[in-house]
Length: 490
Ligand code: UD1
Ligand code: MG
Image (tube, rainbow, N blue to C red; front, side, top):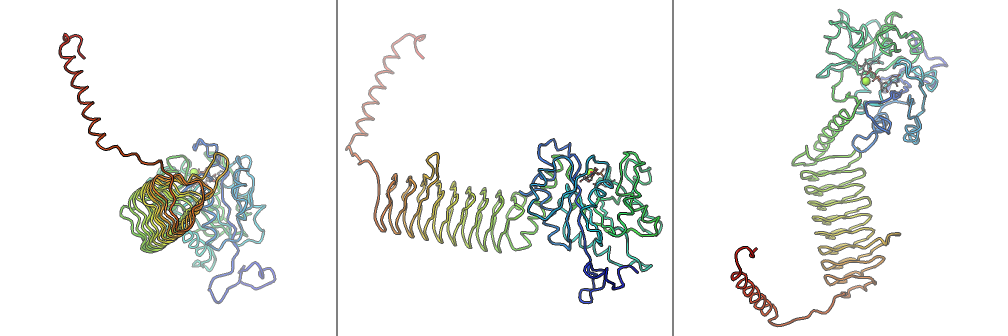
């Protein structure tokens, strides 16, 4: 049968058994449908560019595809093409235009000029369904490759699921033998068909050689007058080919149509990420209050207290401790460091081994070397803080003059007293001490003491004299008031 004889056509495109892996070498193209108008989002941003876990939905799908055996990617877009094209420009995606949008079958037809003609499998995904996993797609590709009882391979693999509310999803209708007979759209379904709980997720894998034929036979004689991709199942069966169903967990297949769905998918993404983090050895005392980005990396034995937000680009090494109500983005935290409570790490924050960032401290574009401490109420920006340095409460690096940014260097083991303003560019030598309350505008030599302070006046007994005199004034006024008639008193 096709694909088993090793002839010239098979070499290069695969189609023969690979004895080692027991899998045929197959080429797969993924077609991502995203031409829908996304009207219900009520947004200037294309629907597939709305972020989940800090990155656009479409990027989640492309990341997923990086983990499966897919060789070509095509995206079908309509309105908002430029936005999408720009956002995937570095991801090896071909863009196909579908204008006007006449249904999912029509959308795949629009993609075909970008799909290699010799392709073995065409995987169809929806751009607005970003939580599908590599495991699910791999199991579909495996099902497409598995032999059926009659020795043939299925022409179509449909991804089915059982949502808690089947609503208006297409229904997967099986025959008496449990084989997939057809997919019926909700609007076209009768009462019996609507009672079916197994729904069409929309994700399908097609025999690439057959797909052009299937597409050419899809009509639009239905409730929506659209070209339904789902009709391909009936057409394949009429041609003597089978379609099979792979069933997946509904949570991975939730689509985004409006902002409520977007929040729901975000919640599912967070849930999944929290579970993965704990599986990898992260402790969270209240995981439901911790929020991650798509790329958060936490090491083993990291402890995350409640109400912590990880923006994009955060790495936390083994054994670090992120205390409650902290917000981190673009930050690197080394082993054993403690951050928070109520700390803010902004992009470029590098917190060294066993370093400490305490409450109400903001760090931006700054490195704290190992064991350095910024324990309270400070802003450290565009700075380098040497190992073991101690930055007192209320220290501010004055890094900006309204036009340009300047750097602050703080040497190893330096001690900066509380409420110090370090006016950058400035450098504090290793081992130097800065007196509390100073405004430092010039460089400080290693092991020097530097301070700027008005001399302290001392007036013996002044406070007591002040209190006595004020008390006398107050008593005199009260006595005078008591003598006046009632209506004049206040
Ligand atoms: C589709 C399925 C339905 C399934 C449901 C799952 C069909 C006919 N129906 O219905 O069985 O249960 O998805 O969510 O396939 N798109 C285009 N061009 C078009 C039309 C759609 O690119 O002309 C894209 C959309 O952007 C979207 C996807 O295809 O990403 C699905 O389109 P949508 O209109 O949501 O299909 P449903 O009616 O929900
Ligand atoms: Mg839909």
